[in-house]
Image (cartoon, rainbow, N blue to C red):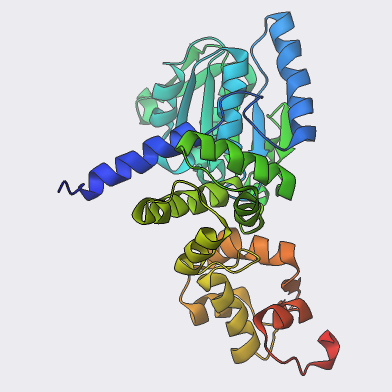
Amino acid sequence: MIVKSEEATKKEEETLERTLRPRSWQDYIGQEKLKAQLRVIIDAAKKRGDPLEHLLFYGNSGLGKTSLALVVAHEMEVPITSCSGASLERAGDVASLLTNLQDGEVLFVDECHRLSNQVLETLYSAMEDYKLHLVLGKGPMARTMELALPRFTLIGATTKMAQLPSPFRSRFGAIFQLNFYEQKDIEKIVERSCAILQLRLTEQARAAVASRSRFTPRAANRILKRIRDVATLEEAKLVDQALTERAFGFLGIDKLGLESDDRKILEAVIHKFSGGPVGIQTLAATVAEEQETILDVYEPYLLQLGFLERTPRGRIATALAYKHLGIPNSRKDLL
């Protein structure tokens, strides 16, 4: 019996994640209005023979910002270099990246709201004038040097648009918001992923996965991989509704896609704070979660479902949350 190491398993998951990512417009399902606008920008740039303008994608995690950057580079027929905003700590890090780019190449910066001020100051002239201003030496001997850069395209992705400085946002030629997906689009994504994973699902099973995917492709693919594990153990050649329900039970996912942590947050608001309002810091301390995790991972979907409401005084659990959890609601203002 061969036992895979943790590192080997992680590498396999990363490889699988890459293969599930769409690389062309045909494979990228959903976000139709956004794609139509992007096609105009890309086709016009190719017709003029110009590099693509800098682009900024924002929206909740798992909606396909990275995949969209890969599709854009593929459609422009140029290489793409990817990095995380947190990995660029100093101006020298940016300089080494930019000077190694080719004309027209895409530099994709994920979570660009985590870029430091020093890095941002370096990027401003690079994005606008394709020039890099470096300071050499210190004190009276310091001097500036200007380096010409290739005409690259910066594609930024962020989950926190409000945290980007205005001078940085203004240097992007176009800004696009990715929204939650519709049920029919998620079902198409599930169907495509099943073909890649060599997993056969009935039509009812595909619809069940889509309905529990939080309107997010990443969540749908994560559920599918766990269903594949259950199907492998049970040696099932065709995944039906019954098998998916067993997988949902194993994962702790209810019919609306809520997981145990989602329910923990709602139950804390209802039971410990009488339905709210409760501040985000207090809520985070109560459920032993990072404040940022609640804001970025859990809250957007709970707001989308109408289970939570934001008020100036804090978060409030709505009547829909009480009903979904089966908790009696005695609050007259929520009836």
